[in-house]
Amino acid sequence: MKHICNENDFIMIEQKGALYTYQCPICKKQYYELVDIAISNDMLLQKCSVYVEWSNTYSIVHQIHNLKKIVPALSISNEKLFNIARNGKKLYIGEMYLNEANELIAIAKTYHIHLNLEKI
Image (tube, rainbow, N blue to C red):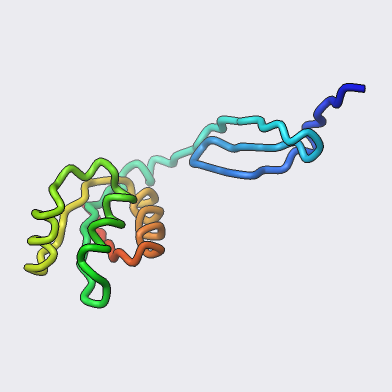
């Protein structure tokens, strides 16, 4: 007899932004759901600039390596990043919404990277 998945039995296994991944506990088949994200007008107005502050307690090379993991769009060469870090200068990452910046800061902490934000 063929198994028929019951939506009430699904287990959420992953959430990436508005994409939810569920799995049937019996047959292990995965289902995806894209949900709407409600953004208040206040949130749309809260933008900030994000900067890297280099740590003296962790290797600059490791910080650069980890920074490129969490910000893959960063196109600055490792040599330039090393010189910026060695001179103690802040590195501008970009502008983003406050909630996005807070998510990035939380991820960066797990990689031992210190990010600061300045509200615009």
